[in-house]
Image (tube, rainbow, N blue to C red; front, side, top):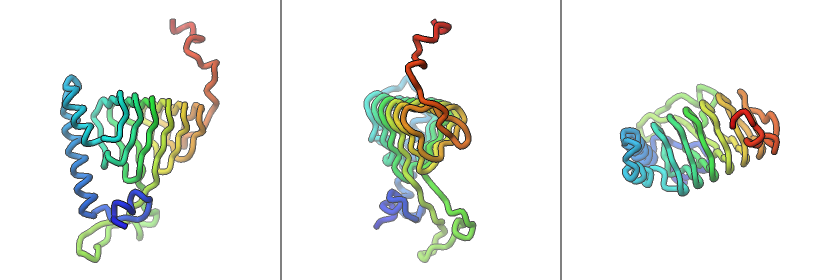
Length: 205
């Protein structure tokens, strides 16, 4: 297996591999370009996203600034929206469904590092360069989800369709479809029901 194949499969890989370094450098350069492009320059921003986030559905809007490790390993569905300061470390695949909205300062983080410092600290590779041992687990977010501000979604998290994740939550495991969930760690609190319909909130009209 190549180091990229190992990385995407969730196995220990060498992050200083030449192919991976080039992919990251390309993504980081595209992020920098996007982050300096005015939102009024819609065609320019779309062109940058064509290179950075090719696997995106129609109607994608990312406010920026943004930061992706690779971009090409993230897939988002149609009508995806992300507010300010989106961070996606997609060393393993990130899959996001249709009609998913992200608040400001959302982080989606697939990487993991060994717990023991003996395994985690940098070491000298047999080829003479310094690297470390890394691995990761994919993240999945279903359709029709609202992820509020300052939410961190960690390696291996699975958020079912129709969920709302409360502000400041840290998602570490699986959230079943149709739930309001929040906390550190994030836990399902209750089902979202017809009683939550906006037209029932008379004070808003």
